[in-house]
Image (cartoon, rainbow, N blue to C red; front, top):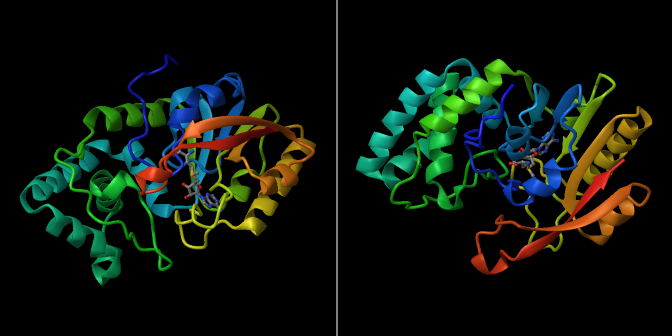
Length: 280
Ligand SMILES: C[S@@+](CC[C@H](N)C(=O)[O-])C[C@H]1O[C@@H](n2cnc3c(N)ncnc32)[C@H](O)[C@@H]1O
């Protein structure tokens, strides 16, 4: 399969890996029998590598629904996005808050998979900082972003992603990452990009889904990595460069890299953040 340069994430996701792509992709083999990404998010690494056999997973149902709808019905999705674009041009924030608030109403349960996917993409393109962040009740709580020309109908990107998801063999799953690590064939390669260990109390960012990802979760993840290593399955994990992570993975390979991240809405905290790449 020829690489498609137009293939890029269609949603901006917290922890997006664009800054580290070169460092990551050079460490991920291109000949793995199965490429596995259990915390896929926006999928920057997946879409750069474009493996022919992949298993992707995320805990976030709305995000996984976006991938499935792009695979199954891109034209209907584009049509729904055109309507959002038109209404957003007319009504701006008023429309945004109506669509954002849909998941607080009974009407939400009646939305089709296509309508739900279009809603998430629309909110992702128009919300402040383009970040999908939910509160403890699982509701999106990001304010309107006031962009002049948000790219709501990304035809090129959605068609490219549709082509990849249909031409390659990509198993799209929703649930806990540990389930996606079950039954991997020999020769699989796993790239893990979990919610990072917060470096300080103020930089804590665990708002991807309800529940968060605290220290206990980081410990469970380390144990899953040890299981992979025992099975002879190679992996790469990115995480923040801090004492806790270095301790948890003291008997794994750890390399430090630095990346510009923009998970903070405060511009003054956006400097380079130390990250580590962990491997077996
Ligand atoms: C750091 S982000 C991944 C960013 C991604 N690499 C990108 O380029 O956009 C972490 C992802 O893990 C997901 N997640 C959090 N807890 C999870 C769990 N227990 N199992 C699977 N996915 C989980 C979040 O929904 C989020 O999409």
